[in-house]
Length: 280
Image 1 (spheres, rainbow, N blue to C red):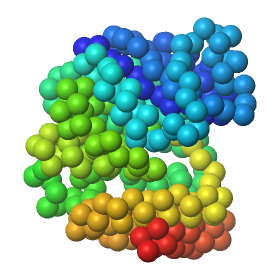
Image 2 (cartoon, rainbow, N blue to C red):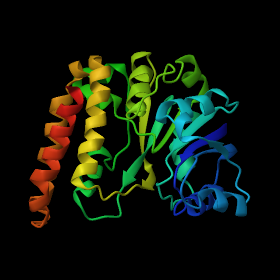
Image 3 (tube, rainbow, N blue to C red):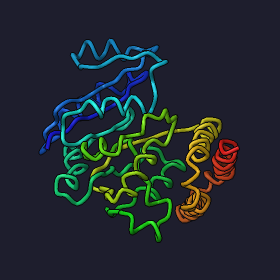
Image 4 (cartoon, helix red, strand yellow):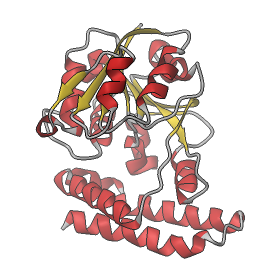
C-alpha cells in the first residue's frame, strides 16, 4: 500500500534534518510523498529545507490549524494510508513505519498509533509507561463498556489511518481544533464501527520538559476541547486523570525517585486546574 506522511512544521530547525533522514531509511514500505507543511517561522527551518532539497509547502501563521492543516493535506492524498507525525519525534528504528502500518495492511484495523517513550527521566517517563504499554492491543466499539475514554486514546504524534476511512468520516469535519484532534477522529473511527490498533513494536521517542505554566496551558486547551465536545464526558474523563495520577505516584515510590515527589503535587495540580479552567 502507498503511504503519504503528513508533518506540520514550525521553528523546526533542530528537528527537520534528522527527521527526514530517519524517514528516508524506512524499510519494507512504499512511501508515496512526505508532505511537510511549514508555518512561517523565526528560525532557519526554511533554509535547511531548501539546502537539503526537501520539498515543503509554506503557509502563514494565520492559516495554521492543528486540525485543518492536517485535514487539507489528507483530503488531497491519493495514497492508501495516511501517516501523521509531529516534528519533534525521534525515529531510530528502520522498521518503525512498517510496524505502524502493518495492522492496516493486514486488515486487522483501520487506524493505528505508535508507542511513545521519552529520553528524559522525569514524570513524563511514567505518563508514557501508563499510556503506551509494552503490549499491542486493538480496540473497537465493543470495548467502550470496559475501557471508557481510553477506547478513544490515539496520538497523531505518530499515527496512521486508512485514507478511504479518513475521507469517508470527513476528517475533522472542517473544525479548527487547537488540541486533541487525534481523539476527535478516534471517537469517529470507533463509533462508526472501525478498529484502532496500538502498535507497541512501532516506537518513537517523544520527549518534553514542560514548565508548570506550559503544562497548565496545555491542559487548559484540553479542557476547552472537552467542553466543546462534552459528549466525551460520559466516558469518564475524571477517572482517567485520577488513574494516571495514582500510577505516577506508585512508580515514583517503586523506583525511589523521591526528588520527583517535590514536583509531583504541583505537576498534578497544574493538570487538574488547567483542565477545570478550560471547561469553565
